[in-house]
Amino acid sequence: MYTIFINDKPFIITDDWDYFINDASYLHYYNDDLLTINKIAHDFIGNKANKGLVLHASNAVKAFETFCTNYELIEAAGGIVENELDEVLLIYRKGRWDLPKGKMEVGETEMIAAKREVMEECGLTAVEVKAKLITTYHTFFLPQKNVMKISHWYMMSSSSTEKIKPQLEEDITDIKWFGRATLDIEKLDTYPSIYNVLQLYLKNK
Image (cartoon, rainbow, N blue to C red; front, top):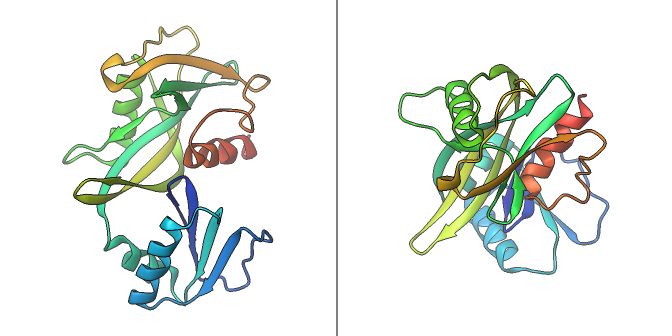
């Protein structure tokens, strides 16, 4: 299953034809023809009435690959950093709480890129990468191209005694450790894809 956020709305591609979201604001389609997928995606982007869409395809991987032909793909990597006090590190970027991440450089592996970006954006000097958590997908639109960002997320750890410093040149204006008692993701002003990452993290705790 793939969940792609388009204008902060989930476009879900699955080959589980029994998967159903019981919400009248969600659309369900059963088709994986190339032209049909493109039309469905185009109509969904322009439809403000629907919260999300589920595309049921005979082969989710092929349907996702078809969907991706409409976009320039950019790969990024980042992480959820926790400390020994069971706190998680969030950054504040462009008016919303976010997780540290950035574009992968040529020749980098996902894990190396994730660690580098976390250290750069948070000012950390010692970070341990534990395990891969999830991959998320979201799109954005530039004047002459459509872009899909594929973000690889890793679980990491660092010490609460480490000095943290936001990377201002990356539009990060604040950085903060959140304890379990203060991390209310239902009220957190963040992006839907980041919400999903944090939700999975808290579920696995």
